[in-house]
Length: 544
Image 1 (cartoon, rainbow, N blue to C red):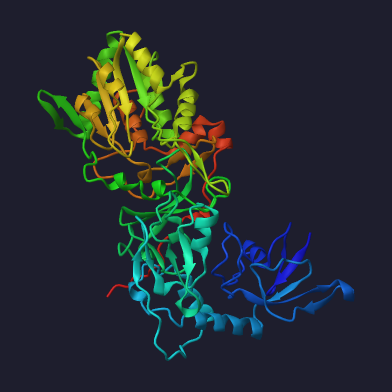
Image 2 (cartoon, one colour):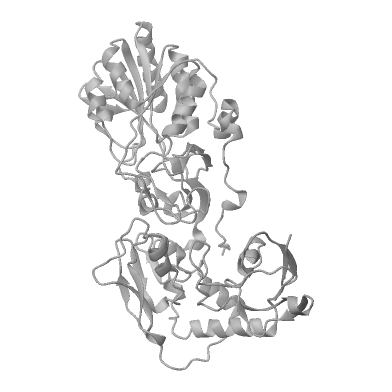
């Protein structure tokens, strides 16, 4: 296997790779701005230049220095070559590039949203000079609103051109271009073409400095206060790997988590900004029970008791129980709800709730796909219900409605929602006629007004679990924030109802234990997040 020596470390590599790519694979830092693995290589920032020696085949492969510094992001890794990261020439170039980049850069780090995760700050500290020698006036550029989600602070831009290449090569919309020359060069949108494509928020992630900022996150939190929890897209069927950045029990932003098999380095704006229902002001936060004239709030014990009593009364009258598990729930939630239904009625009907769709799948250059299916776990819910249902056939939503219309013996129903917006399918409201209905949901809906008992559930950000995406990939996500006060996870509600019915002992919901009990694909094919994906804030506090 070919190898290359980078600094003091010998690194093996396969295939055709650049020096920088080999260094990154081996956790060796070579400073870079313009290079990104998902974009074309332009070698324009020049800070990755290094002194390199490689075998000369004309001199019996004698090691010979290349007479000039080479861009490590572009220069191929050659077997037997050596890269001198600590040489005087390499370090002098790094200091020079940093000095040039900072000539017109404003000294506004204290008010910049990128502070704390800015490559310009980091590299200035590691590779730059201790003081500036520039004494002239800096070039000033205005702040610009370039799209629905993005602001441009042009005077912070270092002209890495990542955003330009992204809109040309990935989104293929080309809204951003380079204008001007010399020290008046800047990026900008073309007149009449705002940055409003479906992937626009990714340019904020790509920007290594504070030039492109997210309006939604602007001045909300300092990044060193944030914890990052690995999660999975809870809005669509894409299964995109994401980070939930949170602080003090609140989600503040969603960022993409690199997974070359699923979403590469990107997420859609729909996923990036579609989590606001997690903190909706009208979130359900206490159980309620139907009384004459409306609903009244009850304790959890009374709510669980009312649900079990109502279902049991219907089953004892030889009427069947139906459970409709939302595709927004995890596999573990679905499995426990299925067990609950069969424990209370061995003839129970198991079904998957309505699966929203919008438009058609859209695949971008490079393979990233926005899914038309707007539910994260329709396949996983079905798989989980089939695992616990034995010979019981799991129905989809349309077949459930037909069976409901034909089978007049359905006397009780457990419905789950957890959709990001209000949902109340007319077909479902039409067939609810005299049945005892229990609804587990997160937002108020017309179904909640009709249900006999309403129990507040939890969003995916508030629990552990597993989703199966449109490509049948099972992926585990972790709990980021505590469950909203007064609510419980759907899995815990199912366990509490089982205990109330006397079918099991009271236990705490444990997603991993449920997966082990289900076995099969839930153990052998599930994808777990890398342990390094959990990131805690690095701010240290001292008591005064």
